[in-house]
Length: 114
Length: 115
Image 1 (cartoon, rainbow over the protein chains, first blue to last red):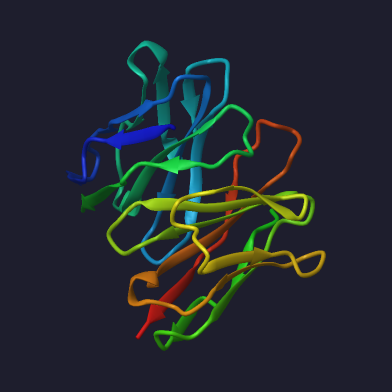
Image 2 (tube, rainbow over the protein chains, first blue to last red):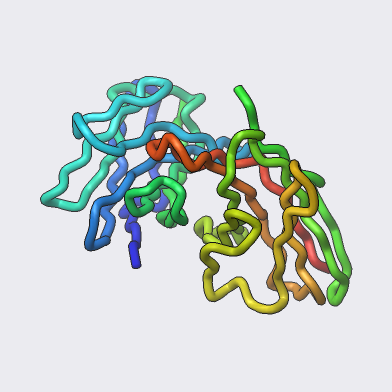
């Protein structure tokens, strides 16, 4: 069975600071990787995904993530955060096939201070 | 962009009662899912459904739970004899069978509060 670890539970940054949220997964086969974001009071939204190809994936709102297969990692980055990035971020994985269950990490709450 | 819709947005139910959470998946999607998120915890998979039957379920999804596709558009989660610990946000999701490189699309969730 797959599992996902997010190392930071709560991150506080000032606006314009750079962001990196860690994510490691464990699974014996090929996986799809995702980052979802949940703004306060809203539903889960897909931020970016990796299925295959270039391991550096660009998503919406200036976010990117890099898949490092040897480290089983898929860290999320943003060079300069904004107050509107305040949200909870979930790393997720599912086995190759797309339609299999998604396993989520415990989430990282990001608070951006103006 | 098409969305997964869930109703109601908030359901308050007395312990021991039955509750039905409703979802309308994206119209050309054939895989359907329920997940839940207990307050302060991570999102957990409950069940996946394809071709009118359960394709996978977690250990959480016991006999208290059932899913159904009663018509061509709705996908429901029924919880019988609700317990306090069933209080959570329940998310429905759907995905197409093809193309295979498509992620699951999530609804806004139904907040279930058991009193």
